[in-house]
Length: 267
Image (cartoon, one colour):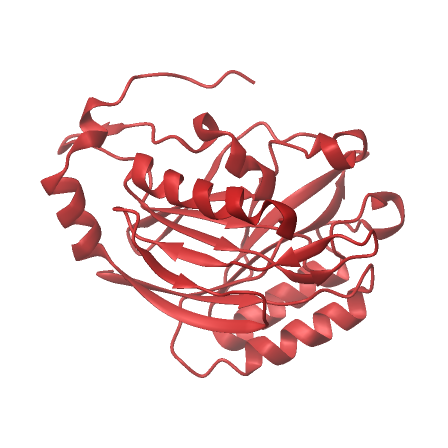
């Protein structure tokens, strides 16, 4: 595929009310008329950033996951967003990547936000997850992961045709607070430049139960650090098409990625 189209939904969330949030997002998703490949929802889109997984978690065959499958099939899109999942007696902040055919990819948040006690309630993920769509590779990450550049760093791949970057798009879903919006915007831009990839960040807006404000600032940034889309503190649905030609041209003209240090990530 020469292009890949994302629809980003920046929205307020109703605190710990799955039914209300799902109703809200279903209306927003069904309102999207432009052709799109992937629809992205914020972190913990069905509950808000809650530290009560014992009462809110569901299994992988739960109602929210089944809803995501139904919507992905109905719209013939990939639907992505994180929610609270219970598995093997542990709780995860898990980003789901739901295909129209019902298949589900997943990424468990690696860096749990200790400042809010997330590390006391949720298990840490141990593996990166890179999805593939029509020859595009998308690195799936969640919120606080943004602060840790090694976790997002390109790891060069090699095949019969040579060496190439591991992924093309770095995707973050988030409940990032307004008080640190400067860090959010700066780090998204840095991740794009240093990894020579498109970067997408989808954040929520509004005040949560704890009184934390969220300014949105959902963004799409190109491999040179140019901001292609930026939503401020308002509800927004935005569809944007990324160009493979543009990505390849940047990497060919500025092959900085080929000089990168080799490394591995320990569990």
